[in-house]
Length: 455
Ligand code: GDP
Image 1: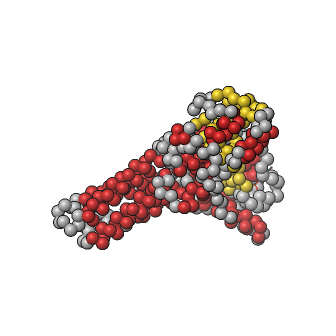
Image 2 (image 1 turned 135 degrees about the vertical axis):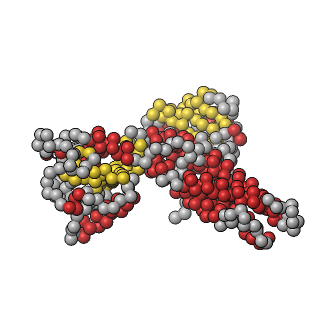
Image 3 (image 1 turned 180 degrees about the vertical axis):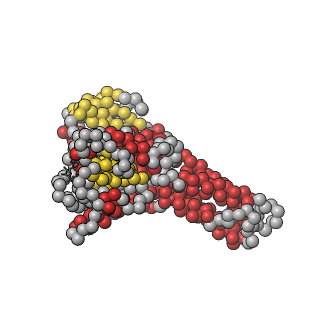
């Protein structure tokens, strides 16, 4: 079912604080009826942008609550339209009674992200800043919080806007060349200047696209996959790192048949830790499906913990992981079962030795995982944080690559110039989609339905 927003002309309201008992519950209002709301419920319109203590009354004059209220007139408001905030006491019955009065005045509950959507439509925020706000609300680790804040302050939107402006400059040069194409000398050089700008922008975008997806990983979590033969101690290690019993542990090989996932904060970095089915020869159909899924996880991993038990049955397939793109940390497990003096990794080919039962070596393993993550440039400068950004930049580069790449290639006729102008226009469009300067119909709805109500 396609999600549709109500009319942008409606006055909307929504609680901006979580449901439940708390000291305060803030309700936001935005839209043309805001002044009427203040008049009806507070008896007057408060001084603009100044917190004012006011008694809120229902339509029969009975007090609902004593609240701090704020009025944001028109263009200076966060949504770019008349808006207000009501800081009630944090009781849901009270909030419900207040909401009833608002609905009686004709207001409707906001859709997810509708306040931010209005801010974007009013030009208060660009789309990357709106996305940053959503990421900030969702952030679970320090790296995620920092990345969201830096995007909110333009770490992504500003350079993208500068690329767009330079491409618009190039486009206007080509358009001027088209205008002068009858007069031999006048347009000379315009086309060459346009090509130089376009090729510089294309190079810069391609450099950013070679970022190994770090921004997206910070947002979604780095993928760390625990793999190895059955009974190597994978599920036990997952439980140990998670600090709780997520996976079922038995000494029956093949207990883990599907992929289990836990989200962790490793020193401020978001990590998605996956436990996978043991990799070995098996005729069991369910186990085979589990192993196929394990292999998919290995292909998408940033880091693989390849486990080998220090004691117990060993086989060739328990020693060598399949060829992987990810960084592999070889982990010797169950070292508590070794005799005194035996707990050494020398000669085993392992990087770390752990016991998930006694906890020995687990800190060293966590450190090894942190060092293996591709984090050198986390939170520094521009980061692509969504697939949407990457697709738009890739499409812009594809359009720019259709322009002649060597400056010696002069346009032979007017038609070529027109086609190249169109390629530039395409590049401007794709780059503009990132900040919202170009908006294909469904982009806004797709972005804001992922927000929470009241944002
Ligand atoms: P998986 O099949 O690789 O997921 O292995 P499990 O985590 O299910 O463990 C298999 C068996 O080894 C279970 O009986 C665990 O209790 C045991 N085990 C796992 N890790 C350790 C460890 O560090 N020390 C000891 N002594 N036993 C362990």
